[in-house]
Structures are given as C-alpha cells and as structure tokens.
Image (cartoon, rainbow, N blue to C red):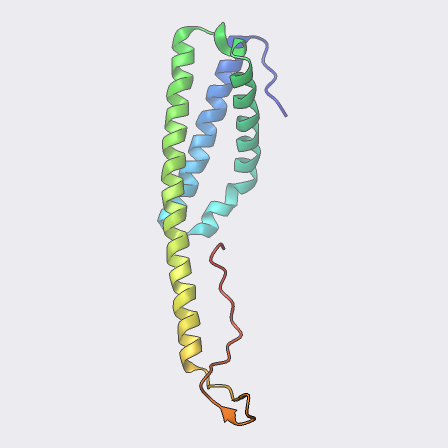
Length: 147
C-alpha cells in the first residue's frame, strides 16, 4: 500500500494527514494505558496498525528518494516536520505508558505466584537413600520474564 500522490505538494499534504491521524490514534492508546484501561486501546488497533504500516512504508520511500517531497512549498514541509515531531513525542509517551502497565502487570503476576507457592502444601519427594523428604516445594507455575 502506498500514497497515490500527483506531485510533491500532494504527497506532503497526504503525509501530514497520515501523520496527524496516526498521532491522534496513538495518543488515544497512550491515554487508555495511562488510565489503566488497555482494553480501550484495542478498539482501534486495526486502523492504527494499517496506518502505521503505511507511515513506515512512506517514510522509507521519502528517505530513499527525498525528491518525492523536495518540490513542495517550504511552509508545507515545515508543517510535516512539526507533525512528525508531535508523532515522535506521542510515541515516547505511549512507550512510557506501556512500560508502566507492563511493570504493574508483572508485579501482580509475581505477587500471585508467590502467594500460590506459599499456600501450597509441600510435596513429598524421595531422596537418594529412599527416605521421604519434605524439604523441596513442588510448584507447577511458570513465569516468563520476556512476556
């Protein structure tokens, strides 16, 4: 998928619209995470993903061939730069919000796992000499640190 621009001015105008819409969507998602309502962030995930892919594709094209936007008026290109800066700021905000949410979630999972392990009865295992030993705790819970 690509932007179908007729000239550099048209391309820059479309990139501004794309960047502003994407900024709006990411800001809404960041707010949802900040309010501890990640389910709200999922509502427009499909549109965000589609526009983010288009943005990535178009920014790669412009980086590879700056002439695609070079002929646009300077004020319009400046507006695109400002829109891009706002987008970068919103992405940083979203990153902080997601990291905070992840930290809270990991803490909750770890606390629950610790409580389950404490309340579980100790399993009986047999040692090397065949005598029952209750020094070990048998648990069947797994924590993934990368999740």
